[in-house]
Length: 472
Image 1 (cartoon, rainbow, N blue to C red):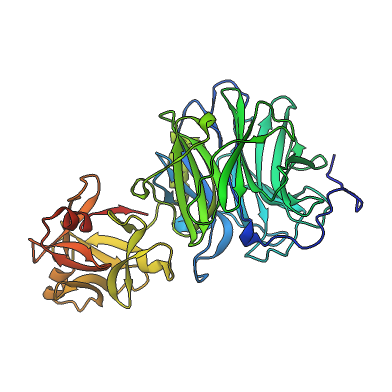
Image 2 (cartoon, rainbow, N blue to C red; image 1 turned 90 degrees about the horizontal axis):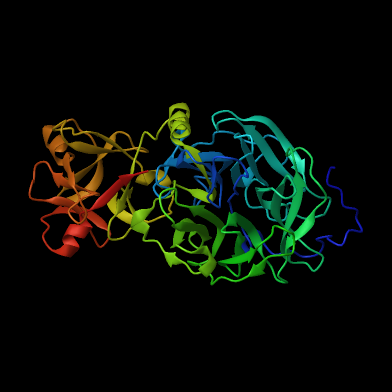
């Protein structure tokens, strides 16, 4: 039955509503009741799953990286992410607002994928939509059956939709944030078998105060966990059933600044659970927490050295995939033609140029392309490496009076030597990287007061200053 709520519904959503900035979005998924399937919380995993796919949209501080289509990234460990399609969208909605936020990817009971998302382009939080975007996909390489799914007739929004399989009902539930008759956001639910029509909406979770961004982990030792945003933090509730109204808050908050968009993911190789959230202060930084016991409701922050989000990514969804699906996604969409370099001792900072000076600065920033580099064979020695700017491709990082700056290649042997470095095992961590000057081989690239230069290094601080990760 299609959703239908009369104007006299007890859920009108009228009056002043909180701004989206005060309430933004999330992402997750839920397990399948199917032979050979593992419950991993946010997402359904086949026993053969060994990798992860992330969906997201993009925004950057000054809007240069804003894109409201579906973006994909992949990971083998669920922590270090590689964006696909050069961090461009793989599919873009054409109906409704012709843009999406808060995408969600779930593997359905038949092994194919469903993608749903908020119908909103940009940040006009006053725009209400009773619909969500929907795509079918066999493999996340092609997207078919694009449509809008109507969830209600209320004059309010349908933010951050996510889906789960309710085995007791034999239907999928679609949860989303909307406004109730008291004027605060609650988590609603509709039920569907085909993501084409849906039942009438019900209140799924209303603790009596404003909550958004519901994210479910289903059937974890007989308990279902719902994480959501409350008061700029991520908080959990739990229930032994999936019955609307049955969830009870229990956890301690997890937050780093104003945090939203919770995403629960269980490691495929250990008992560790990760809780992802992103912030709007500063804009769009992902943080991660970990726990070995969901029932405890307590979380420990993960060191930022251990994870790297796709550039400009916002409000992610994470699902598990097989090794073959990982390989096929990379073959279809391609790996980035550029890299980013992250500081070891300031892992929230990335190597960039600003005013043609080499620096490390806190992520995010615009122009975000200032931090994208093509690592090409060394101009003076092909066994080395040179750093070619993506947004100024005629320019390379080179040292001049030991300071690093972005200069145009003049074709001289002196420039080539100044712009060539030898990559070595990281001086502070051998799994990272350090870069030794070609023509001053006792000196390494390091940062001093956020500015890059080449220096001799010996102390623990200097070794850490000279260590970077090469990722995306």
